[in-house]
Length: 177
Image 1 (cartoon, helix red, strand yellow):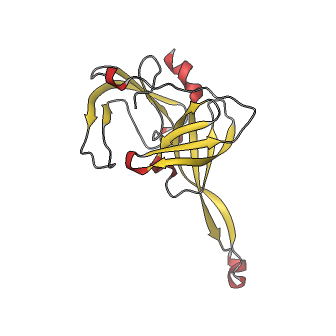
Image 2: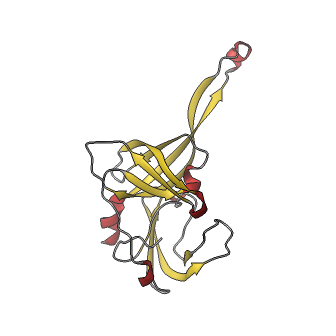
Image 3: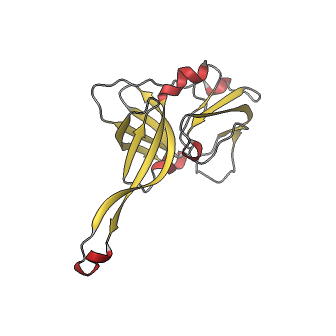
């Protein structure tokens, strides 16, 4: 099925922030211990087999480190290698030499029409590998006020917190949004 074919390319992204913690015992000695604390989650997908992951900028904004969990449960650390805040896009990279990842291909957006089926894969509410289905309800939506560059595909497939960065697919398993 389309979902079985595409699921290996979709990842869970756990974002962490480095915070300083002072224990009550060490308060007067001004000893600060730094820890990475999970502060958010999102989704993403591999666009190159050598570990490049596309996600939303708001998933990585103001965060210090990122852990990627693949469909088969492997965990990797990733770094942000590119961002485009006006379009809310970010590119992460996993550093690994011995692994090739499944990727998703992009659809020709001019062929996406209102009424076509849409499949969203992501990690809503931290429930990784969740799938919702709907139809394309509108194209090139503007004036939402979320980003500088807006040209959204509207769908009735459920998109919840944690789905951010995950792919919206057509029935052929190509990324439409």
